[in-house]
Amino acid sequence: MKSDPTSDDIASQKKRSRKRDRGMTEAAFLSAAAQVFGERGFDASTTKTIATAAGYSEALINTYFGGKEGLFHAVLKNGGQADDAQTVFFSRPFPSDLQTEIAETLIFLTANITKRSDNMRIVMARVLVDQVFRESFNINTSRLGLKREIECRMRFYRNKGALRPDIDTGDAAEFIIGLCFQVGFIDTRVFSISDTERTARISAFSKLAVRALTP
Image 1 (cartoon, rainbow, N blue to C red):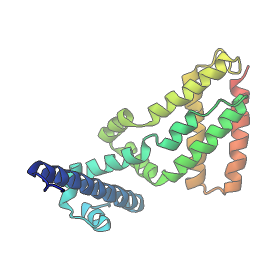
Image 2 (tube, rainbow, N blue to C red):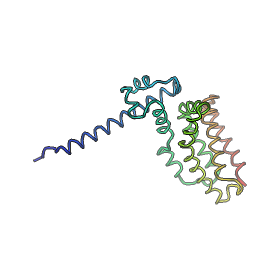
Image 3 (cartoon, helix red, strand yellow):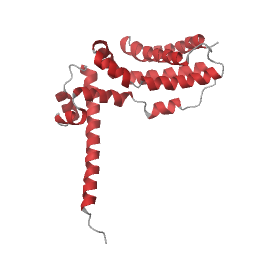
Image 4 (cartoon, one colour):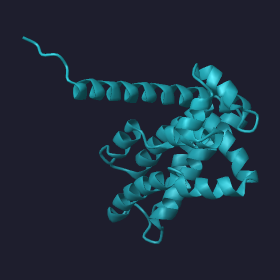
């Protein structure tokens, strides 16, 4: 015979339900905020508009995120962290040659940058005029983790003799990240190059990078 739930059982169930509800609410705010910030920019976006798009009370933005600024940082963190696909990508077997490694990295990262370009556009606008935000962004950006991943891959090729011994692996990583930003954001969003042009540019850049980095 099944026993009636105890008061502890009921309390535990309610706690799990609240946790699920909060997770769903935060996810809705993050999705709505990413869309609104992308369309209007940070300054022109209001918590009321975001709350309406999310379908929840505006007051919950203060409760969960501490206001619009906190929500904006949460959006950046949610969209900028290394996701499972990135983890898998940098854990893949090393290609036999450096050019293939660089080409694959450019293809993968430019696609990620393009996908997140709305957030990046807002970040660039704020970084240029807001010193406090710039300092915070430089500390918390996921770019540092990305640099470490690429630098680790470059050390492998230097140990193989495929990378010039006078090339710092950190500088090589910065060089590759710069190429990714150029193609994934500047060329794609500013100059609106086609997919065909982007593919050709990635191929050309990977060949030029190998010439610059190999003995």
